Amino acid sequence: MIRHWKSLSYTTKFSALAFAISAVLGLVSMGAMGGGLYYPVSFLFKSYPSLNDWHGDWVWPAMIVSGMFWSLGFIWGGIAWHYLHKLTTSKILLRIIYAFILWLWAAVIWYILILNNVTPL
Image 1: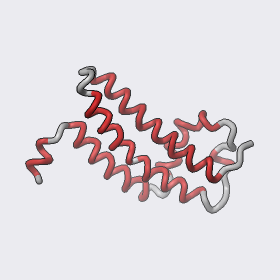
Image 2 (image 1 turned 90 degrees about the vertical axis):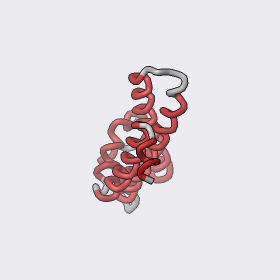
Image 3 (image 1 turned 180 degrees about the vertical axis):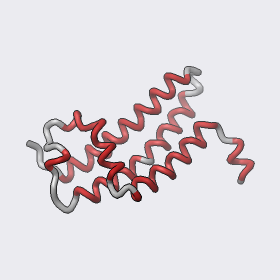
């Protein structure tokens, strides 16, 4: 097993570790991570009330779940890196795409949570 781990690329190792660590932090942070993830994507949801106006029993679980599910973005980013690395050797472009996937995944998660729980303005 250790031999297999050593044979993996740096990005695969990073993605696997980041997935595990961020999943745990999403739970342990008690929603702080999920709330932090909302701010970079909040401009997409201008037709909904702001985070400060949310209330109800759904808010805290949504914060925790969003942080935990966001960890899957590292897996998506690692998969994208693996396949795109064959098309380009630019590490800067690959890192930008990786970061964009993480941002987009946060937007998708919050879109689903907001769509199901918040009434538009």
